[in-house]
Length: 193
Image (cartoon, rainbow, N blue to C red; front, side, top):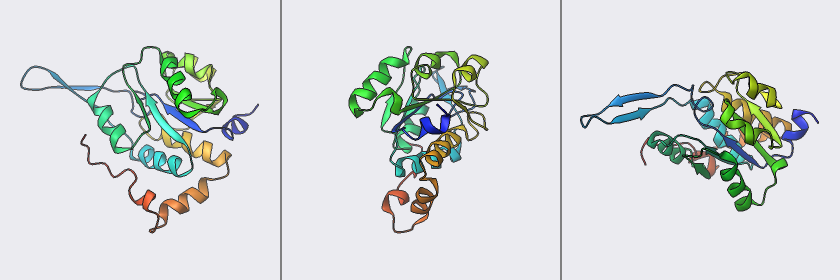
């Protein structure tokens, strides 16, 4: 089965965070109390892509092994439906998402970059690796994004799925329609919780 045919069935799209929605760098800035404040960079293309994916009917979320206030803020800004942090074994979160949505594994797409993502990727209907993914992850993927994590890989995944489903151009026009309230209120985060 081709990656395109797999993408036609997708209803739920889940991203890893570090190395997928970011470039994988984690900046720790000390504060006055001697604690670290974590900072990460996110690509605006991915944020707009998530808005397009939602307009296209995809249910979107993240699962990450780390726990970070930075991720919580970005997830809130993007209005992500599923946010699971501190997940050492990501299939537990996947099973919870599938139970909540009624979706099946063949209706699930997962985007990852490192070996912690392999258990989910090996079971997903559509497994996507970022261009910067480890070789083991690329070997398990049905599709590899042209761009690396933190530089539009999330948008690549969404564009690939919506193109396979024949809805990308329609969704873009919906997003550009000034009378579409859903598009007008998407990804307008303030960087606050």
